[in-house]
Every structure is written in C-alpha cells, then in structure tokens.
Image (cartoon, rainbow, N blue to C red):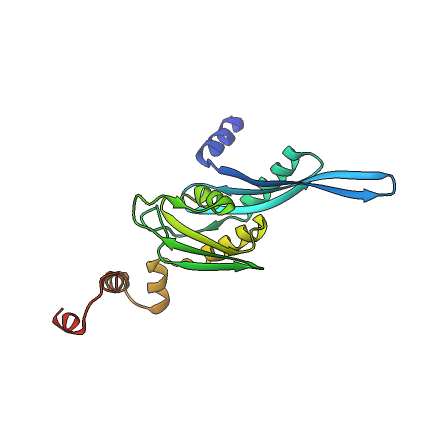
Length: 189
C-alpha cells in the first residue's frame, strides 16, 4: 500500500531533466590518473519552478543522479505571465557572463541558445527572447540566467511592496505600453 502512494507522488510531480554538459576530469597522482566526470543538470516542473546543480562521480550516470538530486533541492519559483512568458525584461550577471531576457508576444517561441534554452524549457517558458554577452562557459551562463530569473517580479508582488492595489499597477502598465502618447492625448484621457 505504501508503495502505491509513493508511485502516485512520483506521478504527481513530473520533472523535466536537461543535461547541459558532461566534463571528463582527470587527476594525476603518483600511481597514474584518476578519471572522474562532472555533470551540469537543470531540473524543472514546466510550471514555473526550476533548479540547477552539478554533480561529480566516477561514472556519468552517478554524476547525473547526484546533480538531479541537488537541483531538486535548490529549485526556485519564477512568476510567469499567462503561464508562457516573463512579466518584464531582466538582466542577469555571473562572473564574465551576462544575459538579457525579454518578454515576448505569443507565438514568438524560445529564442535562446545552449544552456539558456534548457533552463527555459525546464521552466515552462514558451515565449522569450534572450541574448548572452561575454563568457560562453556553461556554468556562468546558467548562473547568470538564474540571477536574472530571481529578479523577475509579478505585478501582485510589486503591488504588495508598494501598498497599492493590483488594478492600479496593471492599469499603469497597460497605459505606458509600447504606444507613444503625446501630452495632449494624455491630458484628454
């Protein structure tokens, strides 16, 4: 009976696992070389939660399993607009790596490269435009992407911080959209 409940729990929580990179690391010692593997993995639920970690072991599957277990423990929640894109444009930085993430209209798709694409697919983002500048190291790019995702705020959290109602924040956002309004038009509204 307990076995069925654990299987149900595993079925309820379906995680997307993306293997970003595997490195072969050799340590030279007196008796020869010690071969190990390092794996960088991204884990997400496809509904706004995502995490990453690296694991090291003597075999690739063991390194991946360690990384997945660590990533599940360090997942973050990212608020998504309409469940498909970011609420606003953000910038993230780690070391020499810098990334820019922009929200996009429906149908744009995921415009990202390499490890950033894996993060967005695991997160559940369907429409986003991104650009990486500087370091192309996988670890730096993933950490910079997570730095940017941590700074995404939903209108509800902004309203709570400012002590305003959600309608005021959303209405202001719609009024200051991409439409350019002259002073006369603004007075007339």
